[in-house]
Image 1 (tube, rainbow, N blue to C red):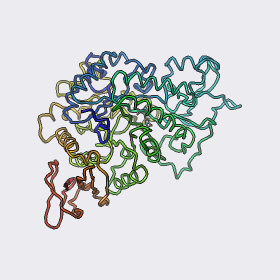
Image 2: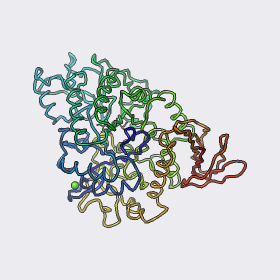
Image 3: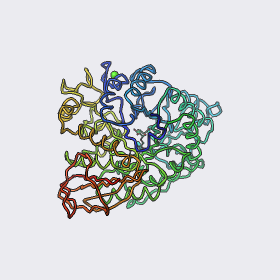
Image 4: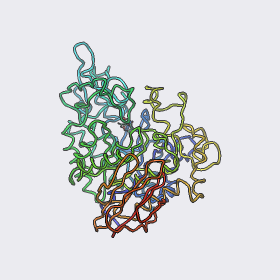
Length: 538
Ligand code: TEU
Ligand code: CA
């Protein structure tokens, strides 16, 4: 049935298309490969897929540098392939979300080519241009996340232009209404093609301070890094002026108004900000006239969250953004896979997966997470990620989470391709291939299937209100209450020793088919190491 609110509490599976499945023997995954593997995704019981960018691109940031927003890059296939992908996904009951990188384009985009050609062409104001200071240096102290100044001198126009990422990713100027219109038109193009929603890249970078004021620089003791490497001076600034400007709200409202013309469409905006993240997520998703969801970075942090940290994030979210909606993830194509990042053993991975799938909010699973993949080692010689090449070896970049998915144990690439893959297939991933895990009832893959099914079967877990019961270093427990009053109590032992938990008052039935074990006595519940416990009331 067409539920316009399908995205609320949905489980979204992220595909990094370069590394999913190659079908034409060039060592790079493609749209046909995704079509071929849709049954695997459907077997997980998820609601939707989010496909990282497949648009025309010089691929300097592997598709996050778009040179034509209305076409598929030939490396990935054709628009016809994309139409076939949507059609097949819908047949399998999967929604399709695409990844729009609107904050910046490629420097090869025709808009930028025109904009840089002179100071008075029709698109001269479409990017962020500024004169040099009298001594020739950049207009201000803003930095690029990928290293160095955020300003690049353009020898054609004899001005600097802004780029928050690579210099080949010039920042579009959202203060210019024509730019907003053009990006809304791009969105409409894909809505008309039948996509169900959008993952919006770096939405908090859309608008910069028009006056180009310097960012304050933190003293050394405040230079904390969250998901980005501490070695990066970008993390030493307070980003007051280069992003997060209040005018963004008006654009997000225009965006939502467009989506609302098409019933059941949704948007999740990426808000990567270790300093202000939750406030911004709250603002951007408040009410019904901004975007639907914000992609939260709280659980992409370097350390495994213990019970206290989980409770802190969830209660802060309720306080700050009770009427907003988050989308949580542990892994994605930008961070070290969480099995490695948090150094989790097999059972701890299951415990954390159960936690993720019990959270209030929507949930993203990153390809390979369902297999329990660890971060792959990629040598400097094999490295592709420009961010990693820049900061190697202190920060090894993002390739270790982008290596190809192992589908089978046939051949050295695990069935990903017949030729040398664009990134190596990690040998230790082969024993975790889909083919092997499919036929093992107790595999990680089958655990994920059970746990997703468990969330989907219990409405309170998808959409229910959140109420914290207990938290400490070893445990966290909470109650989710659905619209009809049904309640699910969830408890998680995040430690490697048995821990007793307290059941909240009232009668709780344990007749829930969760894939976990616990010892229940008159006195209470004892959870073995890394076990979860669920009970219900209705
Ligand atoms: O990422 C934005 C972003 O801020 C992260 O890359 C962040 O820098 C990193 O996690 C460390 O904090 C998005 C895409 O996900 C990424 O792949 C692109 O490279 C980037 O935008 C530029 O488009
Ligand atoms: Ca291919």
